[in-house]
Length: 459
Image: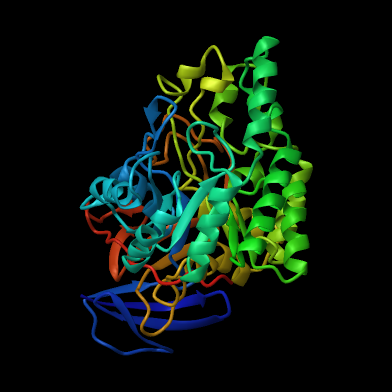
């Protein structure tokens, strides 16, 4: 299949120009003005932005958690991602305690194979890491899984002690791997939760009130300190507040290879959304929503490159039957919220349309930086000759209203219900194949492929 995209405004992390793109099969073959090349499909992108497909490096499809499983599987979740202009996800496989690292990845391969609408890779959530696991880690890295996630939260389930974190960071750093850290002081948080429940404070808002920003800041500080001792880079996932961001800023100012992502929920939603009733369960995620004053600092962090990436931490649970498991206690509400479909338009609206970041920076934080960070660049994350033809035709002049009535995520609410955003994804190509055309899905189950990633080099 040969495709020609005509007259679009091509925007990458560093470029901004008008030209045509000729795609032969899965690859961008030629970029130039007024190309006159025979093609099977011609797409007129006049007046539209032509940008690299989005990369969401933090999703949780089919994740067992809190007595249930996230409501999007690899079929529905990646289809929703495609609708929203994301053409690559990196999902988190899980090694359960006592299980080999390889067995954990094998389970996720079985979940995803033949189901995805777009390309995908895996990180591995690592719950056991002794010296004997080093060879398993290196085997996985040879297979293209070059990043691993450890938790400072959820004692008894995921929490890793400092020695385990140090061992994992040291081993990964030796081979160009990257440790992704969920950074909160989970042990102290557990004590705060016990006190709240003992006092009868069980409503969803107490999920946020028992996880103070200082607990996240302490975790970030400790994660960076351990990484420095291990002589390894570190990537902080879903950073939510200025207290934590200040720890990253200080480390980067000292030349430490500390990187971090934030998510749309921490840029647009706040602790006020919990309210006083069970509707607040929609926003029970970890870290929780914070006070509004954090928004401007996080946007500043994105602008100044103290934050490198916007992911979603997409981990949806329906209100009915799933979130309702915590009807009597916030501590039993499955943690997570939907977002993979809405990320690109939200960040365009809040970033470019509202003049917080440049158009090039928008592309960088939604695609290019993640590709570089996680060993996918330049195959992914840019529009260049020889790169995969993962391309989005985006109309910056149209608006849309985000709603459960129109989204395609398999969940019974939208975290941004009723929000009007400027910018609409119209057409999406995944490796040269049109999977979304004029806002309608035209792809097929199984279009996506597993991505063998290279070394995580940072940005």
